Length: 216
Ligand code: DX5
Ligand code: ZN
Image (tube, rainbow, N blue to C red):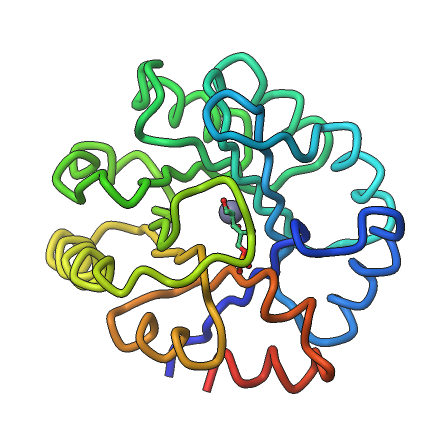
């Protein structure tokens, strides 16, 4: 059986005590830390900058998955890389040359990913698949934690799984938005490799149990 990667989103953590919450993620067996970076332009919210990533890098060895919901990732991704991000995910819906961006990120020695918003199809990123390590499928409109999983995104996950397997691309499928112990099953069945989960994990009475339930 393949190992499912669990990437808790610190968007739902206590921002006054981030170090404590990230240490908690280590203890409950998280694989990655999902860091939601929002610029108040690409999405209607402002969250975490590279300075926060740099500080967190000092307290954990967990893999940092930086989800850049920003209009100009070509301008800022290096800051996140230098701050300690292991994977840089930009959005398909930005204007910059995505192939060039993916190549630059990978050439710098970190992993590159592309994310698609709910209205963006798999066909739109097919040409990019040979150049990225991961595709992040949004199952909510990006911007806020705590929203409900959009079940109509499931065919997209299945389609992506089929394309990646048929063409033998070395590319993980990550799902982000509304993941809990029920919706995780739907995503895993559809072919997901990585599950992001924010409010479900951080609001759980027993986060260790909550995280376990995501991958079984
Ligand atoms: C939304 C973010 C998500 C979000 C997930 O724009 O990209 O990572 O934090 O939070 P939940 O799991 O609460 O939907
Ligand atoms: Zn995210």
